[in-house]
Image 1 (cartoon, rainbow, N blue to C red):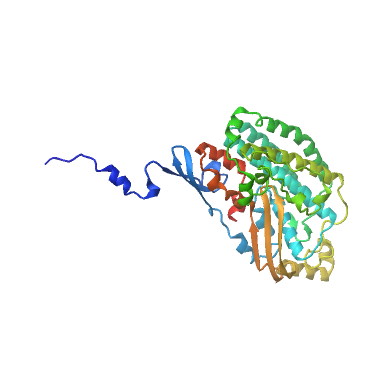
Image 2 (cartoon, rainbow, N blue to C red; image 1 turned 90 degrees about the horizontal axis):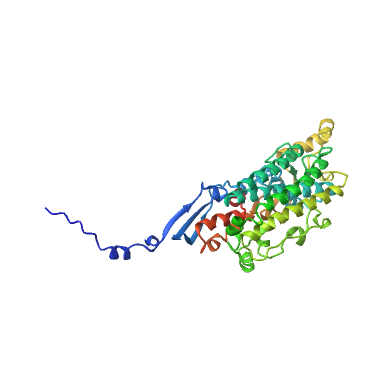
Amino acid sequence: MATDFSFPDTAAKTAAMPKEFEPEKMSLSMGPSHPSTHGVLRIQFELDGEVVTKADPVLGYLHRGDEKIAENMTYNQFVPYTDRLDYLAPLANNMAYAIAVERLANLQVPARCQAIRVLTAEMARVSAHLMGLGAFGIDVGAWSVFMYCFEEREKLYTLFEELTGARFTTSYTRIGGLSRDVPEGWTKKVEAFCDQFLPILEEILGMLTRNKIFLDRTVDVGIISKADAISYGLTGPNLRGSGIASDLRKDRPYSGYEQYEFDVPVGSKGDCYDRYLCRGEEMKQSIRIIRQVIKNFPGGDWYAKDARKIFAPPKDKILTSMEELINNFMIVTEGPQMPAGEVYFEAENPKGVLGFYIVSKGGGVPWRLKIRSPSFCNLSILPKLCVGNMVSDVVSILGSLDFVMGECDR
């Protein structure tokens, strides 16, 4: 019996295929364990050759339910959870959350507390941008940049450890103040870091700014127009890279930022290269702010003494006064006592605008807490930004957006 080796009617078979399985397009999943996705992000691509025709970001691999956890934690107990949002800048996260709760309580912290918060937040900004710059360098093939950035970042972590007792997840801020004052001589060490850091930063940027390979990978790649940047809710360097000089430290100053002089760097094209330049200049401006804080470092208290039901009393008073011991017991077990109401506060974090919306029904636990994470909003433009670019360009685009999945998924 003869066997029929003829092929079926391929044209008819192709016509019957679902549209998403058309043979000229290829489906490619990038992540969630791909090194260039900077965390557990997955992007489902549709490709025409090597050109992206469709991009769907898939989130949720790092979801921990932080907002729901907050409903079962006292206000101070939730501070360590803010460390795990943008875990490259926990000191800045702590500060934004604490100010939100303090505004709910209509509480004003002393000038020294504000200065320390600004100082640590700007150090965190430098640390986060160093990480972003180093990772971006590796994405486009510049290994040396990564090593230089990490060495400087380690110096900052040593300073963080001397101040907070921890290198990474610091949990330094408290509602109504800080966990402790700065150690003696610590600000001089910070100033010494600033003095040696700026020449090294110039050397790091010099390895990329006029590098032919880096220019080919970033110039005119991933262009975000002003209109798109606003429409998609971009903030931080990704917004400023598109030419919009929006910075909450200037527009709506908090924690005494109005006292300090600094510039807001903006881009012209809105491409990957502009976003890189903005972050490089922002580090210089952060050093400028740090020096001003140290020069005019105020004395006085580092916590609000009049906030008896919010900030725990000093240890010596707890050990010598029954009234203070009871007060400390109530704050630890029931939480800082807040009035009923609601508040929304947002701060200019390294990745963009980090916002906390808190609803209180009174007592020591929030009734509802919502987090506006900049990385989540910044990634919303990916489906439009990736289309028309090659797969290799997507790596540069992701590196230039500099997101952290910890705050994106929450």
